[in-house]
Figure (cartoon, rainbow, N blue to C red):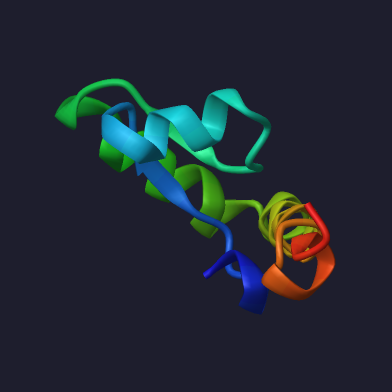
Length: 71
């Protein structure tokens, strides 16, 4: 989703929480009751949604196989 510039709402579990903690631009939901607020935030604020999507696209662009194969 990040590669397409789609903002993510993620749970604080497994690789999703880890990605958020390592800087992945996303809306982090700590428990199930937080999902409505996370969705509402992105639905009602187009500027924030677009900005988060752009940041996500930039973040993932630095994590491609092509850009990191030398490692």
